Structures are given as structure tokens and as C-alpha cells.
Length: 390
Ligand code: CMC
Image (cartoon, rainbow, N blue to C red):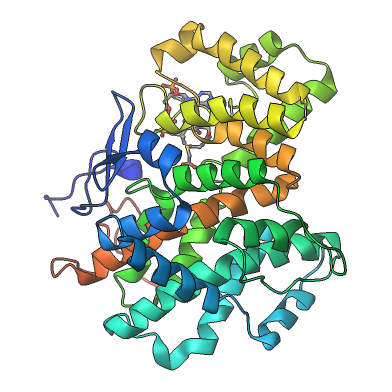
């Protein structure tokens, strides 16, 4: 059109204004609603941060209590929806299970899903915060062939989630406080990250007037890819492969640099951070602490540290300003907690859910939001005639 600028990957184009998350990628700064991520990770809880992201301010203690109670009251899944899991193979990737189940969840609330009805929006916000962790845990149980547990609403959000994942029917489950606090921290670190691919997807789908469930389900699908949330799973696969093949770390790094076989150093690099990802710094600190406290020693953590050390001093990575991102060390912690590798990205999704919900609401309530509709530069065939048409 003459006005269209070509911008692969939206490197230079802002699609929205937002008051939720601030990132300074050169300085390695991340803040939710103005609060530094370091302070939130240390002092807050997943649900408190969720409230902050969604409503803009920290909740009072009674607001937080009501929010928490409300979520506890909505954790049950419809018994029919539980049968959905039996239609899938036990080998199903839990990310596919999660996105499909969230889409399926919408069918139970079809006449309560008007994106412009504040009561519906509120209710579905609570429903998703309450039910997605249950779906996630059932995807995990399904992959193991174990029975689903009912949510235990006497437990906190994170403890209930741990019990649903690791509890076994007929045996009491004792929550490990080290694991609980570590998971809470990791979830907080993932709660929002401004206009990343999955959040932009949620906004784009939301811009068509689609309901919250469809928008979040689309976000989950976007997160699945290995360049985005799927990187945490890919990092662990990479570490395992290096260890099992006996290849030296130096040799692996050389292969990455040669770009010959398309191998990347997974968990490194970021579109926005050209400095150490502040989340990765916190996760790395936690990794040592948590593994020690859980009494786990994992050679893959040493391997990850060795990889980081080599990469941070190598010209290839220095020149391109590639640092570890949030996904580099999380997998080692999830593994120590007992999560299978294929659950790692699901944990990211549960972490990111409040951010998606907050961003969806911000977009839908912004009078300037229009249907998202990128331009293209056409490079195909000029006009031509169908055989026999003239
Ligand atoms: N290993 C090796 N080379 C890399 C890597 C990497 N992990 N990341 C970027 N590069 C190179 C890239 O090849 C390019 O080199 P050149 O200038 O010679 O062409 C240069 O660095 C710039 O990279 P880019 O691909 O233009 O950067 P981008 O902003 O388009 O991509 C990224 C960002 C995160 C997709 C990319 O760094 C990547 O693929 N990293 C590995 C996957 C990963 O860890 N993803 C998680 C991101 S953080 C959390 C999340 O969003 O889920």
C-alpha cells in the first residue's frame, strides 16, 4: 500500500500500549505493575501476584483471602470433562492435552462467556485459575496411567497442585515445604512477560471477540513451541543428549557456533534481553538451594553451569549478546521435584496464565483495541486467466 513496513517477527512494531509489565532488556530489568520481579519472587505468592497483574494493585489481605477462597471453590472439573482424558493416548503430550482441554472447558460455559460482560469475565478468570492446574495435573497423571485425585481445597494453591500431581489415591500426601516454596517462586517468575508470542496470540485471538477460553487455549498452543515455552523441555533434552553421547561441552558449543546442523544452545538468547535475564539469575540461585534442600544431586546441573561458563566467555555468544534465559535452569529444578520432562512447559503455562488473563482483559477493555490484522507485501503471480475462461 506504500504505507506498509515489512517487519518479520514484529521486531520494530508495537501492537499495543500496556500498563502491566515493564522490561528493560539492556539493563536486565523486569517489573510487574512497577514492582521489581526480585522483590515479588522473594516476598509474594502466586495468587497475590496474579491479583496484582489482573487488577493493577496489590490486594488487601481480605481481597486476597476472598480471591483465594473463590478459586478454591471452583477447582472441580465436570465429571464428563474428566472422560475427555480417556479419549487421548497415554503418550499424548501434556501441552496438547492442556490446550485441548481448555478449549473443551469453554463448552460448559457457553452462555456465560460474553467477553463484554464483566460478571462473565470475572467468573471465567476464577474458573481458569482454579481449573487449569487441575487439568495440568490430570494430564500428568494420565501420562503415568495413575488415578486422578480430587482437588483438596484445604490446601493452598501450590500445595493442592503438588498433591494433585504427586499424591496417590489411598495414601496420605505430605507436602514438602521446600518444594512448595520453590514452585511458588518459579510460578511467580513466569507470571507475565509483556508482548511475547503467546501473550500476543491471546490478544490477537481476543481482538476478534472470541471468548477467554479460546484465547487462552490459543496462547497455550503458542507457548508449546521450542523457541518459546517449549525451550525448558528442550534444554533438558539437550543436556541429556550431551551427557549420553559423551560429547564434550566444548565440542557441543563448537557445533552450535558452526550453525551446520541447526543446533542451538537451548535456553540461551532472547528477543528482548541483551543482558542476563533477571529471571534466569533468580532461577540459577534457586537451583543450587533447592537441589541441596531436597537432597538431590544432578550431574545435569553441573553440565548446565559448565555450558553457561563456556558460552559467556565465547565471542560468538558475547558478540550476539546471548545470555541464559528463564528456561535454562528451570528444568533441572522441575526434574528434582519429580516432574517428567514433558510437564515442564505445562508448568510454564500455569505460571503464565495470570499474565494472559490480565493482558486479555487489558486488550478487551481498551477502546482503542481493533481486530488484529497484519499487512503483507504480495510477491505472488500477477493477474492471469484460468484455462478456458476467456
Ligand atoms: N544458540 C545459538 N545461536 C543463537 C541462539 C541460541 N540459543 N539464539 C540466537 N542465536 C543467534 C542467531 O543465530 C543469530 O545469529 P546471526 O546474527 O549470526 O544470524 C543471533 O544470535 C540473533 O538471534 P535471532 O535468532 O535473530 O534472535 P531472535 O530475537 O529472533 O530470537 C530466540 C530469540 C529466543 C527465539 C532465540 O534466541 C532462540 O532461538 N533461543 C533458543 C530457544 C530459547 O531458549 N527460547 C526461550 C526464550 S525465553 C522464554 C520464552 O519465551 O519462552
